[in-house]
Length: 394
Ligand code: CMC
Image 1: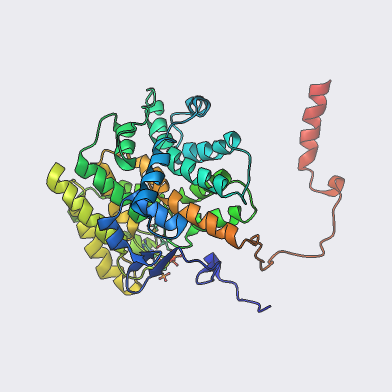
Image 2: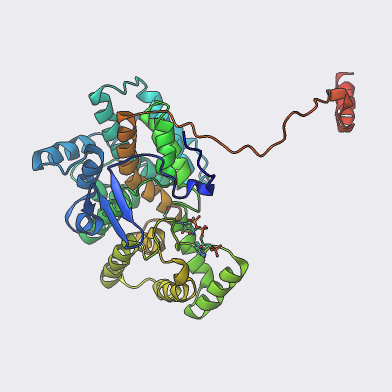
């Protein structure tokens, strides 16, 4: 076996072979199963894209209808899941709520049978169907309201916005939200997908796979960045403050949220599409106060950091789209998760196909052959605690 050099963050180290998606970071190309993201965004729906990712090819009309039908009728949550959610603190982050709910599904559908195609199909349908309902239900419950039941006459994206905002969405808003889901559905071996694959490789249940991926997506260096972008734009406040803010970040060597990517060294193709979607929403529903600031930021960062390949990533413009759709800021990452479930499930299935448990090695940096010091001979700090315990007993 060849011994590889240690590379922090496993940068450039292949962790798997995959035929699900492809990224060319120099040219800004993203393909799902060989189809350009721009084409899927324009022509496909999210569920059609999810089918493509998970089952490996675009569905026929009949296959798509059957898939949509199944998902439509599995959107409801068991009342015990809703009861469990009622006990969550309303101040808790929705990503934590989602992680707990995804894991809880494993309690209800516990007969793991990874070699049974029906089990795989059922898990795919349940997770795609129920995760949006969980996100919307937590949002209403934390406001003290009952969750809204899914509506069978609405498609996947319109139904989510309906459950969230308690009113049927504008058709353009629903279509744009659906495109956002398509754009976020998959992105090769990023941190959360890797997390899903490692968990999958132990042959645990798919609900645990998705729960671990949700936990990984939550971090600010990954999916959580979309939330941080809005906070940052809010803090900057005016177009005039943009350049001093960028300068200060560069001087303090702090990361500017929504910029930079391990793979893309040009503007993320998804950011380009999201920016266009944001503009279409602004045309119909009115401008966003932060858009001018965002445009100035993109220009300033390109001038200062473009030579390092730092450009807007997927998280930079997505928040502006979600704000216009009436989605609260701390639901941005759960919305990312709703979409990414498709990619995680595709990788789960692929992992099961040729599974070998992940068990990398490490470069040990600790000491060895240490002398063991018995407790009584260690520093005296423990004596005080012993006295306290004695006095309680007496
Ligand atoms: N702002 C300023 N400088 C940056 C940024 C940024 N956002 N990103 C990278 N750099 C600089 C970094 O300081 C370093 O400079 P130098 O070589 O002079 O030390 C160089 O670029 C390479 O940075 P790195 O941290 O080694 O790059 P990485 O591949 O480890 O990190 C990243 C990638 C996405 C974690 C990072 O760019 C970042 O933290 N961005 C901000 C958070 C963010 O927007 N995350 C969303 C990522 S895309 C969607 C997703 O994954 O969910």
